[in-house]
Length: 121
Image (cartoon, rainbow, N blue to C red; front, top):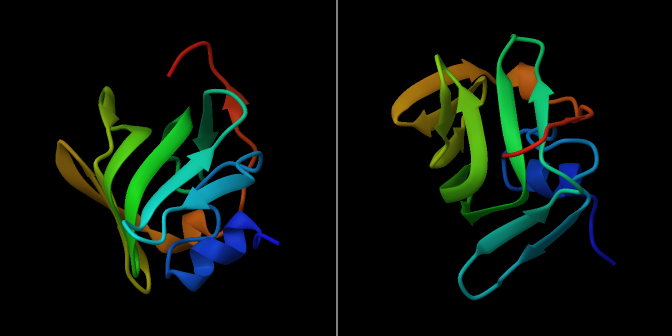
C-alpha cells in the first residue's frame, strides 16, 4: 500500500503541500531515486504567500533528503512563467531554482491545496 503523497513528502523533508490535492499517485524508482508525480490535468496552485506554481500532468525529479533536482513539469511565475529545475527545502524556507533562485517561506507550502485547471502547461 502506497503512503499518501503528503506523508511521503514529509518523510523526505519536503513540504506536504508542494503538489496539488489531486496529485495522489506517484512512483519512486528505488535504484535512481527518480520521483514521478501524476496529476489529473495541468493546473495552477496559489499559495498563502501569493506565489503560484503551474503543474504539468507528470512532474519528475530526482529525490534526495529535502531536495528534488532535475525537475521537469513544474513552473513558477516570477515575472513570466519560468521552468523550475530544483526544489530544496530547509526548516523554514523552500528554495526554487528557476533561471534564478527564489526563496519562499516553507509554511506556505505545508497545506495541500486544490489546483485550478489551466488550458496548457
